[in-house]
Image 1 (cartoon, rainbow, N blue to C red):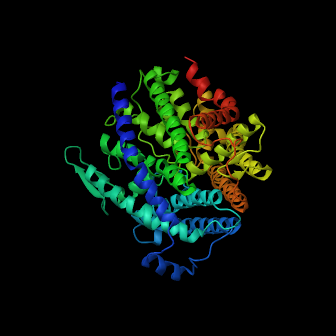
Image 2: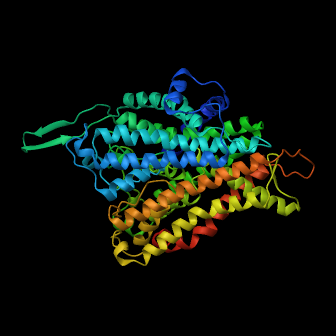
Amino acid sequence: MVFSAASVITQIAVLLVALFLVHKPLGIYMDKVFTGSRSSKPERVFYRLAGVDAGTEQSWSVYLRSVLAFSAVSILVIFALQRLQGVLPGSNGLPGVDPWVAMNTAISFVTNTNWQTYAPEATVGIFVQMCLLAVQNFLSAAVGIVVAIALIRGIVRAGTDRLGNFWVDVTRASFRLLLPLAAVAAIALVIGGVVQNFWSTDVTNQAAGVSQVIPGGPVASQEAIKVLGTNGGGYFNANSAHPFENPNVFTSLFQVFLILLIPSALPYTYGRMVGDQCQGFTVAGVMGALWLASTALMAWAVASAQGTATTAAGGLGEGFEQRLGPAASSIFAASTTLTSTGAVNVAHDSLPPLAGGVAMLNMMLGEVAPGGTGSGLYGMLVLAIIAVFIAGLMVGRTPEFVGKKIGPREMKLAALYILVTPTLVLVFAGITALLPDAMANAPAGGPHQFSEMLYAFTSGANNNGSAFGGITSSGPYVSAALGVAMLLGRFLPIALVLALAGSLARQRKIPVSAGTVPTHGALFGSLLLSVTVIMTALSYFPALALGPLAEGLIQ
């Protein structure tokens, strides 16, 4: 396959123009969604049925308990109904899902990871796909968004312990934001050629005398929220490399646009809510710079085709979808690993080793460029607090962030936040590397075997969901270990973010003085960019050196 630099540049340019055009309108709309006081009639009906008092706001601890309770019930319901699939309508004649697979799937979809230990078309029917997994694509994305909004409220508000009402926020995120956007996106995907039906087709090759069942289903509607909500779970095992999910270059680029849409517009919402649009532009600028650098690095790594496996195969080809080509695959792979999407239109295990390392590094950055729906913004804001603390040390002042002091409590919460994911990844990968039976689930040899396992736990703990295809994750150990990594990687950071929001909300506003370090502009943006990269390098470089770097540099 021939790599075209012109194709990469053209597609990137189209993406940037499209995202620029919707950045402000969508950012303004999201601000109105979460700052408005009036509820629509369907929302009021829902609140009455659910017993929710929409006028009551919650402290950070109550908000967190609501997030955890909502997620726990979701996991139990999805697990139970998967096990009962054989007696439910729309099962496509499939039996109940294996308990280990059902457990892992329930956790992965509720945590916005969408790790798939199964082949969807051979394991789950239309009911599970549409009524369980697709619904969770909406709800898990909504949870990430509302946690980011709660953190912004903590920054904006003063002298209070109230951050809003989780049930109101998640309802508005689902009904007013995700549902309308997903409906429009699904129509566009159907026009682009993505399948949307409720049946399979029997096909017989008369000459060969062979019959085959071509699976169908409501693919476009699930595909829309899969990418819009930075979820990533495919309707088919091949994910966005399957022609029913992603039939051409237009749909591939449109899916990348949907992946980046909400995370790239949320910084504008942040700027409006804090009353200083320069704050939002700075965050968006850092996210954009990281995305551009990573996408360019991914394209270079794919084009160079370094590594013994790629050389032995005679260059690029195996694992790359011929309809789309390596240029589209480079942009897709970079964007899905820089967010919490995990969808693939190229087998990441078939990427040249250094390109696979870039995909892994993207997740290790914390998926903040622009990251998942909500999780990218709150991750970047935590890094901004770390950056302003470092700036405060340089000038000998107590650090301030948007009118709030960053004291010992805030720094402890921020430090714990940035330590959670690296600890989970390195501890689980290290323990697994010492267990021969567990490592046998990654059948490759040498550095690539370690890369496969390191990638799996990096993906799980960062709630991404993509994988190097050689690994088997349906067994008890790997399935359970990844499940724990996904749970802790999702909810520990959320708990710390909400605690941080509560701590900031209780403070009084501090007026800007001559000694205040500006937290916007090119200078602070450069510092924030450096902190993001340095934190990742310090945490993960030794592990990367044992895996993709060793594999890519050995010819």
